Length: 116
Image (cartoon, rainbow, N blue to C red; front, side, top):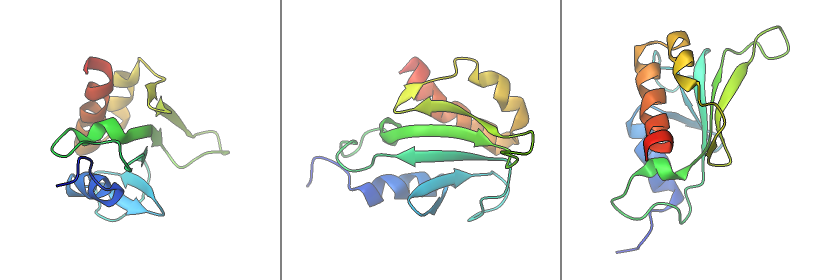
C-alpha cells in the first residue's frame, strides 16, 4: 500500500463531501451538486504526496476563498487560506454569508487550520 494518497484520491475525498471539481479547482455552493453558482467556496489542493493514507485530507488545502461572483462590480470575495496559511482570523464573520451546508464546510476546513 502506498504511503501517500494520489492527487485524485484527495480530490475524490472532497467530492464525497459535496465539492465539485472543475479544471483542477474545487467549488462548494451547498445548494446544487456539480455547479459553481454564487456565492460559493473555492478551494485548491496540493494532492500529490501531501496526505498520508488514512489521514485528514484537509492538510492538502492550499487555498480557500468565498466568492459572491461580483468581482469588478463592487463585490468580490475573500481569501481565508493562501499557500496553506490562514489569512483571515475573522473567518467566522463570513459564515453569515453562507447557507447552512456551506457554513458547515467552511467551519470544517478552517477548524483544521486554526485548531489543528
